[in-house]
Length: 253
Ligand code: NDP
Image (cartoon, rainbow, N blue to C red; front, side, top):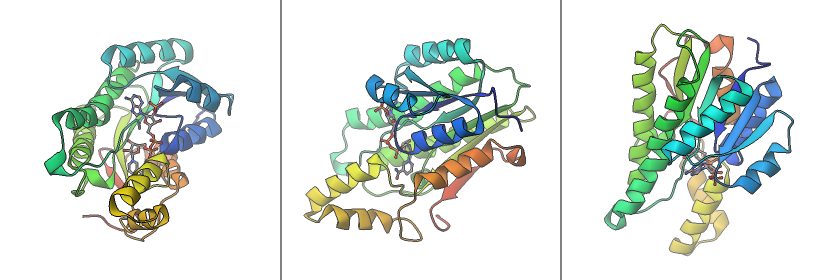
């Protein structure tokens, strides 16, 4: 498998899980376009590695995604690896959930993944090699109390992957979802701070509470998700398609 010269796009590639994957792909020799809304942070992160390239793009805006992919592809070629990672995870008890917050979550996590894959696939011929990877969550496979919009959006992402793997069956493009448990990233930091405040506990106790949500009772590191994404891009994983791969220290049902 030759990675040099391949072009990857990682949405939400300037922080957390996306940043880990972007650096991993760049380390293999791929040219990696990292996207997000925060242009300053994107520029700072792109300066970390000569094969990282910053692109401001909001996954909730169709024109932004379409134009962003077009310009990235014109600079670095067809997007053979696409990691739809951008997402938000803001818990809200269902009784207090608002339609605005529900829509914001669905628009970012589900519509954003739809727009991202559609724009990436528009740069590729069906017989070209390609790897489409979505970052779902264990919340894509089981219900997560207090985060119903998030749960619904991440279930939707897995449905999208399964449908696309059928539609592109027999091509050289695979579609898979990675479903991590709680990973030590800014999302967990923010959620721990929120839990600490609402339940009157320390942030450390709140982090422990989140870690207990993983089957092995510890937070995951971004490296664990990166390794799975890199494996999906390898020749060895050429027949892995339409899967929702759990990384949560044990089986999640
Ligand atoms: P971060 O908050 O660090 O990353 C989220 C990224 O998404 C940011 O880079 C942000 O960039 C980008 N983003 C958010 N909204 C938009 C938007 N409208 N347009 C473009 N980019 C956007 O969190 P994580 O790294 O933890 O999360 C990454 C993914 O992993 C998410 O989909 C999350 O649901 C999923 N996940 C996380 C888990 C965890 O425990 N951390 C567990 C399971 C899944 P910017 O602000 O520049 O727009």
